[in-house]
Length: 296
Image (cartoon, helix red, strand yellow):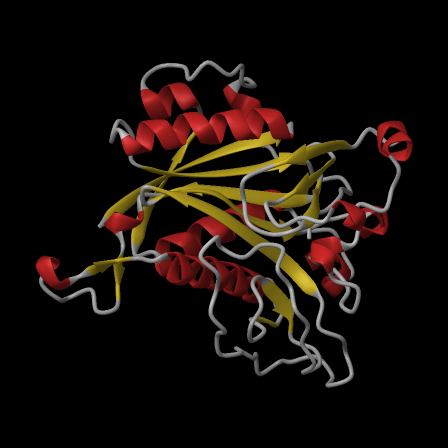
């Protein structure tokens, strides 16, 4: 069984998050570490993927500076999105050759490595199950990437967080406890990945206690016809981010048929520091519980 080491970082600025990913990707390619899942929050930041349109950042540079929001271009697929506190961001640094596509009982010589599309589908499944753990019906929408509330049937084109190779349409999964048919589909989680030599980076953002007003500063994922929502908004109450993180961990273990190992520090993960100052271990496991912000 594959082992996934999980490190929970608290709040990390986006530049530091990118450096951590780059360092871990290099180590994973050299097989100096195993698969790693980072869970964290970002301080307020707007990111532009490879397919981003600058016009989808509505706010002026002066307004962004006034509100303390950074702006970054990155190598994930897709358009414009927002990250902030109250949102759990997950960065899986996985070697996809360690995960089989299709029957797992087939001889190893006949098993195919997990591809980009299947990897994205599994991330969606993790988040759908996590929402279900908190009694929120969630689903996929055909032709789109991400996780949505189980509302209406109309769909729209969303290119913000697709894998670089593109994503195929998936069957819509509906919960028995679905919302009324007139409720609009709203985005709970976004997914955007980058894959280099089978090793993944970037990942997902799940809106937990997210301040959705930040989306007024952008056209989220280039979409004007669908709202963004959060677990807090769907349930009408604040959630414990650590409880949501634990649910994510359990569902990663199930969906990826892996054992999850919680690690407090990068020293424990690597046996040495990776060159980025980190918080004391007691703070690493604490995500903020106050109201926060979002990413598409």
